[in-house]
Image 1 (cartoon, protein in one colour):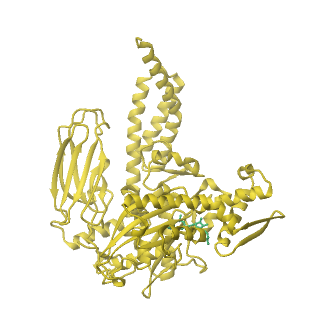
Image 2 (cartoon, helix red, strand yellow):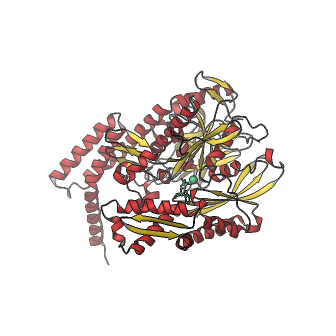
Image 3 (cartoon, helix red, strand yellow):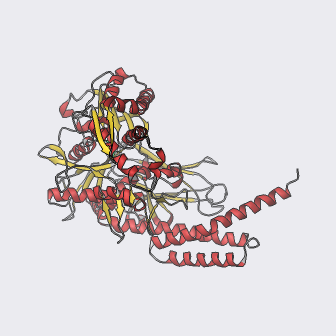
Length: 622
Ligand code: ADP
Ligand code: MG
């Protein structure tokens, strides 16, 4: 098994020789890099100024959108239509993110706590995947401008702690942006690669190294402990804080200055631009203090200042917290600082001298900081891409599964369990449930391929999990595990967790499929990515609508005596509208109809619930 190259223009298979780019899709900033004359470089903007693309999307009045530096300006002037930090939402349901709701300046839909989150901008709904795809498209345009050629293959980095859903969401975003994502690489692994760590060409091949990657960005902190042997990277442990970063430094400076100027904190929340101006000035001061000892400026006619040591006092608690995380990561890996061979610094905030000094003191060694900490992850991704392209012959390529493996779910959708290019052996699983009351059997159909609808993929086999004890729909917990061994044999195991009922089959996924067929399947998926995503979105919206229609009818019947005539009529009208929307083919129209119905019925449902409780209490004999 290996990675297959496809020439998109001609539709032919070939040994991959064309450029594969490396992308760092960050929370605050994103970058694209490639190999230029044997050297990894990040691509600059059209003016040749910077390599960072702020991970921000702004939606304009006329249904258009802008990405990057221009969108960042709109954060101040039009926050409701400007989306930032979308990476925090990747692969998450509303329930996963409800605690951070106050953090976002835009609207996150809460109509269904279990489904993947959607973001509302004006009258349209966007998934984090779609928004990330817009950022990726911007990067794609940038590199295509630089190379004067179409680019269709990429390696994208993600944090080491990203789970299956988050990785899959990142892959989908790539697909939607017209990129074939050949591999998802961990950010700390990419950073290490950028420094040549773990590259057998630059070290003795049988060396085992243990390294720490310290990544302090704008809003997040990650520490990863990696073990590298023969070019194979293994994550021993990760730790960090998803709400700790350079933004906290800025805020501490702002509060310091407000005291210096004798201004009350509430000015920051008032409707004026003062808060934003002083925040930008604080970031400027912070950056300046990374290289000088004093920052002075005038703000509305008054002098403000900050010395290096004042700044260090302010941020000491934050830096201390990152060191605590480092201790935890080491403890989880069963190691002490002396076991760490190298420490790699990543993220813009590691430019702060106190950060470098503290990390170096904790690990008792100098840190790797000669590369630009903003660029290091993207540079490593470009190197990994080059390895995949077959240009670095002495670097070992791990065995991977060439096509995604998954099962059929409601509406004929392909639910990927093991994504293609996963290193084998590997194991992954997910939980499912029944859709009909009292359902006794569940058919599990296993497919291979990249398309969103199973009918376009290749069926590998199916089996029936029978004898599920009768329960209401949604109650059984059916755990499906895919185990792919080193020989490429897939074992699919299904287990109903409440009754411990179990069944399994073995399949050889690549049996009877030629390299050529495999290539065609990949090509197909790339050419149809856009329409597949649209169909998937529509089918999901329709499923949701059908479920809501059923429960709506049920609600009307069960609560007929509690509702007055106007309420009944309104609900009926909203249900009819939803039914009509669901028979159409615009997913946004369906979502709008769903939202209207949910908004109207939510208070009624509360009333019905109160009534049920009251009645239950009445009937109770104490
Ligand atoms: P992310 O990984 O979250 O996308 P980055 O690695 O791009 O974030 O880091 C962005 C952060 O780095 C911001 O808080 C920014 O202010 C900070 N930063 C950038 N340059 C410097 C500098 N010279 N000194 C201190 N902090 C800096
Ligand atoms: Mg980063």
